[in-house]
Structure formats: C-alpha cells, structure tokens
Image (cartoon, rainbow, N blue to C red; front, side):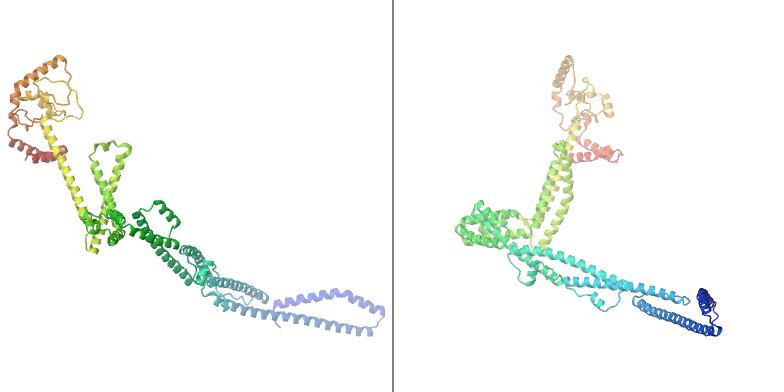
Length: 621
C-alpha cells in the first residue's frame, strides 16, 4: 500500500464518517437490545442473533462500498477516455485550423485537465462552425452573382471539398464577392444606359430588334440577358453600329437638305413653303430622308425648266464661296464657264461641279481660313492702334477708353506673333504636302504677310524721319527766332536800344549775360518787332512813342534788311550782329564742335541733345 499522506487522511475522514454513522445507529441498537430483554432471551438465544446481525451488516456494508468504488472507478476511466478523446480532437482541430495550443500540466487533477481540454475543444468547434457558415454564405452569394455575370465559380469548388477555410482565405473570398458586386453594379448601370441609347437610335432609324439578344435588350430583363463580358462587348458593338448608321443617315440628310436648300434659293422658292417643309420633316429620320429625296427630284425638274436663272443663281452662290476662300480675279477667271453666255445643261453641270469643288476646298481647309481671318483681324486692330497713337483726342480718356485700348493693344502684341507662327507653320506644311503655294487674292499668302510687315516697318521709319525732320525744322526755327512759351507771360516793355527786347522765355544765366551786352545798330532795328505771344501793357503816350520810333526805324532799315539772308541764325546764345555770323563753313564747324562737346559731356541734358545736333549736322550737309 502507498503511504501517501493524502490517501491516509482521506481514510481517516471516511472512518470518522463510519463512526458518525455508528453513533447515529446506537439508538436503533438500544431499541433492539430492549426488545431482546423484553422477550427474556437468554445468552444462548441472543448470540445467534448477534452473529446474524454482524453477518448482514458486513454483507450490506461490503456491497455498498464495493458498488461505490466500482462506480467511482468507472467515472475515472470515463474521464481518462474523455481526456484522450479531447486531446485527439484538439490536435485535429489545431491542424485543420492551423493553430497551436499548450498542453495542460500533467500534475493537474484528472477532472481539471478534462475540463480544460473540453473548453479548448468547444472553442475551436465554435470557430470552425462559424467559418463553415461564412463559407456557405459566400458560396451562395457567388452562385447568384455568377448567374448574373455569367462567370465561373471560385468559391463553390472549395466549399464542396469540405475543407476548412482559414481567415485569410475567407477574406480573399470576400474580396472576390465584393469585386463581383462592383462589376455587377457597373454592368447593370452600363446596360441600362446603353439600352436607352440603343432604343433611341432604333426609334430614329425606325428599326426593330433582329435577334433574341436584341429582344432581351429591348425587354431590359437582366435575368435573361447575362451581363458577361461577351454580352457587354456585344452591347457596345451594337451601339457603335447603330451610331454609325445614324451618322450615315445624318450625313445623308444634311447633304440632301443642303442640296434642297441650295435649289430653293436658286429657284426662289417662297420662304413660307420652305419653313413648312422643314417643320414637317425635321431631323434625320428615315421619313425625312424619303421626303428630302422626293423634294430633290421635284426641284430637279424645276431646275431643268429654268436653266438660265438657275445658272445665274449658281454663279451668285459661287461668288460668295469664292469670297469666302479669298479668290482673286485671276483665280476666278480660271473657271471659264462663269464668264460666258452658255446656259446649257453642260454649263450647269460645270457650275455645280465647280461649286462643290470650292465648297469642299473650304471645308477641308476651314481651320486654315479661320486662322487667316483671326490673323487679319488682329493685324487690322494693331494698325488701328498704331494710327490712334498719334491722335491727340485719345488722351481725353472718357470712360477709361485709353486704358481699355492699351490692354487690348498689349493683348494683340502678345497673341499676334503666336498666331502668325502657327499660321506660317501650317501653310509651309500645306505647301510641302500639296507642292504648290497657298494663294489668296492671286498672291501667295506667306508673301502677303511678309509685304505687310515690310510696309508696316517702312511706315514706321517714314514717320520717324518725318518727326525727326519736324524736330529739326522746329529747332532751326527756335535758333533763328527764339522758342515760343507754352503759356504767354506778361512782361514789361523794355525800351528800344537794350538787348532785352529779344529775351528768351527761358530765364537762363546765359540770357542774363547777353542782356548786358549792347546790341549792334542793325540788331536793334531787327529787334523792334515784339515776339509773338508776349503781351505788353503800355500807356497811350508810350504806345504812340513806341509806334513812331518803330516806324522810323523801319523806314531807315528797310533797305538794309533786304540783304539779310533767310538762313541767318539769331538766338540769345550767339553774337547777334550780322558781321559776327561769319560764313557757312564757320557755322558748320561750330555745330560739329558743339556736337562733340555734348557727347563727351557728363550732363544728361547735353547728351540727350546730341542726337538733335547730329540731325542738324546731317540736314545742313
């Protein structure tokens, strides 16, 4: 036997329990002894009864204890078996779910170990059940989506294999379902949008579905029309095909309508009749095409009946198209039938052919003509701005007009070079492709651009020379007669015989010095005339004396003044006597010396005047 203290202690506890039972049984034993005593049983009679009591007691006690031990042993074995089963199942679940677990301590009681293992197994069983449940739900969703999208399944084969999915696998399956849901929504939106467009085109083209797929599209039943990629491509192809048919129909209707409109104009069909026809047959429907064909045939009959008028109307229309293409007289003359008196069917055909050719040329090169028109418009505005620059009225600036004009001018100066660069590049490429010049008004347009630039530059140079000439003439006049003040200044009249009579409006130190120099007798006579713009207030007596002296001087010097040349320069900066002027070569040398001094001087004012002196020198040569 094991001398385990725990076991021995448990035995003592059980013995105490037996003793407790015996203590509780004493009353029964006392009653039994009392009965035996009342019966008067002797010792010999009591002993067998004691032996029987002991026998039954031992038997019952042994059987009871044996049953208890057996029952507890069975429970022990069952728990041991459960623990083993839990271990096996736990191992399998961990392998299946890609998990690991920590085995309980072997020293743990058997019941505690069984309880621990059972909780682990129950937890993994629940998780496995949830995973399989989610997998089943995803598989059902995939089946529904694959029926709509017509795609093969991905989750179903895995679901049928009964394999337990991992969390990552379930996440991947969920992403697949979400992608399919997005594709389903997009395909449904595209289907119904394309269906509306296709139905509209069917209505315009007056056609109906020609196969079962098209009938499903018309019905709009996506349970029958599977939204697979093949069917979506077919939907796009059908729409493109109908669009092409409609474009052809629209082009045909536009061409017929243009011909009908042209014939209406040439045949002078009343406007009311035209409007009524256009209201009855709008758009590009098949019914409209038929009506336009019929109207064109009717007009063709009228055309043959009015050849001369029709040819003249065609010529008028041809003139408009020529003007739109900037045809010159020489270009127009190349089409001889337009300048003859032939009104035959052949002449009409030639006119119509030429008209179609010129219209086609304009349509094919519409972008170039628009670019030319844009360039010509900007060029005209630029020339207008340059012409306005010399107009004094532009400074009145009513309503911010000058500011707006300046902004527009800067915008054109910035944009025009870009337009010209693009136009020149386009025309050069065109001439290279067609191996001929792009002609407008009988001239190559690139040459026109060059000539316009040269003419503008020449005009600028001419205007600059004109301004320079005017400035030189003004300077010479000021040197001869003095400058005129911008605002008249009132001065006292200086007596005749002083040098202040020819005072300059500018009160410079040089002029003050010259006032101190006594003028020559001849200069005194020439200075009798008061400079223009200077008012003098004189008393009546002084005025009469002044007039008398002036008249006398004029009579005395009238014969002498006739010998003074017109080119004599008399200013306040020189000796003002005729004798001091010297000859022409002396004047020219002095002018050259003043020019060189002005150029080498550090004064900014003299340097600015150097250009004027240079022009004077050039003008005198």
